[in-house]
Length: 88
Image (cartoon, rainbow, N blue to C red; front, top):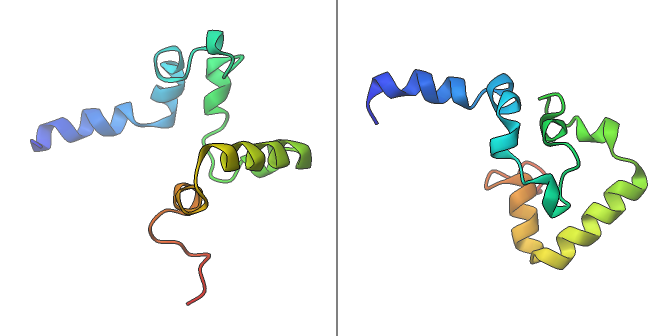
């Protein structure tokens, strides 16, 4: 990728830009996924969901993930290839 392209990509991937263009980036509220597309980009801090989700929300989320993905896929999606939760 040409070096001159990187600044625009970095800017476009920033929280403020993504939130400003949420109507184009977030699943449409008509699908019943999001009531408000801007709320998808709530605050931009890692782990913020822990302050927002209730225990019931988390249980519902875990149940839905289990319906949609095999355990190894769900684990990879949540922790990535460099799983820091795995014992060493």
